Image (cartoon, rainbow, N blue to C red; front, top):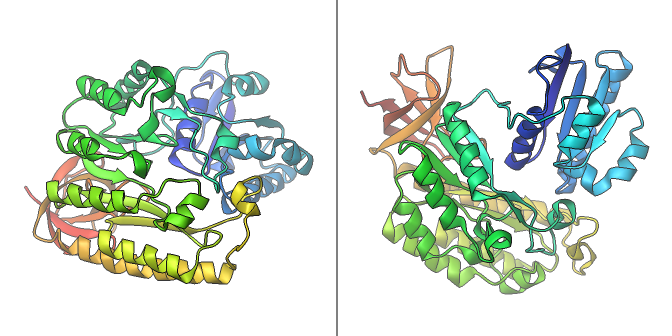
Length: 428
């Protein structure tokens, strides 16, 4: 019996890939282990999107090489986005790696490693079976000037809605209480299959097939293609949580044109205003970039003004990285790292104040919370509301919840709030 440990780096889409890869394992010859110290073979599913992710992946490979030299593990496999991007160079740099595979080339890898002869579908790798990711497709046609995804993953390739529904039903049967739909851009799902975006069709098919108490969460929605109809579709559904992830990146028209993205400031302002008029608690998450080439103090201030006005519930940000092979890396007026870091800190300080204000608006309300963990010392249960995406957003701490186990959805009366977390008591 061979013991295999899988390390997944990067975004939730990589987690889906790791589960698909694990489905190739022949259980009569391969056993998945949670501890790398128990492994004979270690497989690392890499991220190659931006330089910090590449550096993290390389650090992991270096650690595995040392383990192999010491005899702690027998073999190393490196797969995923970083191999797509730097494959031949990596093979020269790391000759002790035994197996290489580009993202989604799992059948060839399974044959090379003698994992098994056929896939049994996705295999749960997380200790949280109640929250699962459903990847609707791969690749991207948008080609933002700063982004490496099209060169790594290729053009849009949507999965059939029938396959997605079948996979979703299987995950619910395995205990899923929340399905997070992910892709490079959810709003163009199905364009390559049906000649037009087909996300509403997919949502209809999922809702017809899935139980009413399931949560469906939508990630990675391009701002120019989110409209009132989608907001109404979300609010009219008993399953789709009123939380949308809309990565805006920036609002200055000149910067957006340089990013090869359409100007969206007026559209987004109006859209989010409509959403909050429809439902004041509608949760909006975004991602912003600071320090893109040519970003001046004026254009950065316009970004701060936009964030102040829109008041996102959740906001992630990162400093621009000049990625090799992208048009933006060749642009003039690159912003010094010191200035980028300062702008990042200023943006996040502003968002912290906004987040606390939005959080406090939920004090006194009753919310459904999906319980995820139990603090063994004081018995506090920790979970997430509709406003909290797994791994990236805040949590809800629940007191007086004896007997409540992870995976349950319970009603919680909110009594206090911090910048990112809520606190409350279970409503019996």
